[in-house]
Image (cartoon, rainbow, N blue to C red; front, side, top):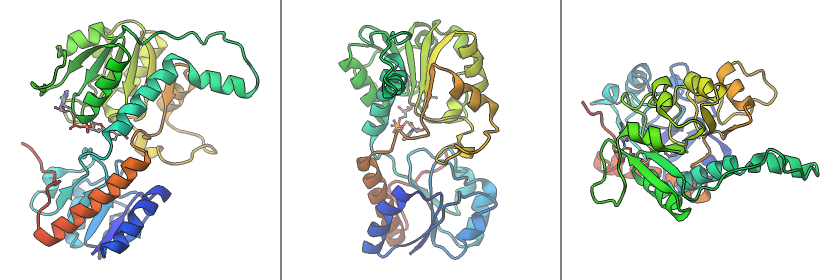
Length: 328
Ligand code: NAI
């Protein structure tokens, strides 16, 4: 089998190459992302392997189909970047449903602790022997209300971490888990009562901009917003407004609405054109990591292993248990 691998990073190559050789799968590693301009690179391959910021739009899928590509292998859990309707009946789409929910949940808490206890500021200060404590006052997490939107694999692990800190958890899910011992509330109540709000739901038409001007208006003054799920869950303009007006006390973002133009690349010597991202990053109470929450050794190994199993299962049986299909 020949697989065109898009948006390759050194850590991807390290984890996929050896497993590919062991299983008779030949990868061609491209650094470029998959999109309408680059799709021709997939000509002659049996499958394409893509990540969160590749684009499998209808035009891309139609071209892949024409080239004889049979499978889109998502090496991630989310599939909002694939037009599943367009793929129906043409190309099978498979994903890695869970690679390390712990990695994402733990990163979420790392961001919260960093922000709340001003670790990012203290680190820079002590590096230059500035041992002043001014402006480093944080707050206890113990007893605070944390609102968790999306109580799937990651949300539940994050909730357990929060419970370990003695926090009061308010949960919201469109499909609440009746078997879980969780304090489910309506979304408005979660917005009104939470000191910290963390997003762990997928990006869908329904959850697009679930955090917008209206929902921010319902929140407590000084709320800390945390997004390690998908950028477009938050309207970035509304977030910036909320921070400027001091309604939002801080934001921890591992994802950003327009991240595909920047994240995973080194822009340190460039002029960044995105004024909203630049302004957010300039804020003292905004922490940004570049879609890093998944990046642990355990997760990378699981991603490669499950992706290879998906390919083998599909080419041996014509089916795959990790297939994703469009819903009406
Ligand atoms: P999951 O599928 O186990 O859980 C998602 C939960 O969201 C489910 O309980 C579902 O019922 C709920 N949900 C669906 N629609 C909803 C709505 N309209 N409102 C509220 N809740 C809704 O997914 P998992 O593994 O917990 O991942 C969650 C998200 O985390 C993924 O969709 C992905 O976007 C993101 N993610 C981010 C990573 C990163 O590196 N930053 C890595 C992996 C996932």
